[in-house]
Amino acid sequence: MRIYSYLCKKVGDLTVKYSNLPESYIKRSYEQVYWRNPKGYPQYPAAQIARKKFRFTTNRPWTLQFARQNERGTLRKKVFLEPVGEWKFFKGDRVEVMVGKDKGKQGLICQVIQERNWVIVEGLNTHYRVVGKEKDFPGITIQSEAPLLVTTGVKLVDPETLKATEVEWRFTEEGEKVRVSTVTGRIIPIPKAAEETVDYKSKELYVENEAKDTAASDVTKITFQPKLCTFEMDIMESMGIKEDRVPAKSYWY
Image 1 (cartoon, rainbow, N blue to C red):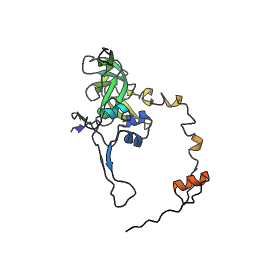
Image 2 (tube, rainbow, N blue to C red):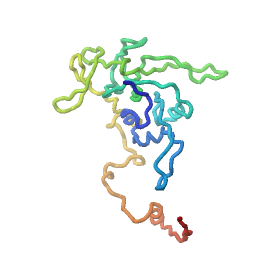
Image 3 (cartoon, rainbow, N blue to C red):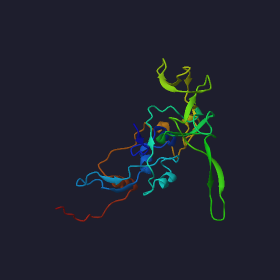
Image 4 (cartoon, rainbow, N blue to C red):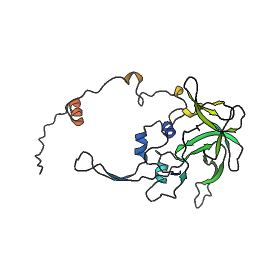
């Protein structure tokens, strides 16, 4: 069985976790709606014309670079992916490269692109690319890591033998779900770097911002008081604005 590398419903769970953003916001940021029926009118059914196929790359779905790569009319050749059951690779894992010029070398995963079954290993599987090339400037050549497929390109390293191994998810006696090497039975813990997001390196080091974050003591407080008025009427009442205009008559046939 093979599937397309295009997603229209949701992005990977690890991508959402890394962004530290609601999944609904990420979907709104990359979706392309060309036409939609107006809301609130019973005569119009809920329908829309939108782009359904996106090409996921190393750029995050909520970024401007991703939007430019998926502009209308830029859809490239389809790419097929092998379905992956339970994801076993996380940022900070030590893996061994199984293909290419760096076959046999080990390194740390620095980025995970779950939508394409990709991981990027720090300092390995690199290639050179030219940036900023113009007429009068030759550009700058930089070294960049290319992604590797988790299905064939990399394997996790057993912490006991320090060699590549297959792993599977199992449960401990306490009910904790862990990754276990099928060769030695050694548990491979999820690295601390897997908790890293755009906002913090680890949850313990995150400093709350009064202007951005809601205090834990305010989460359970109920500040909304229901009223028989619209949102606009509620705002006018709180600001002391009185409405003295008389609405014009309207007729429905």
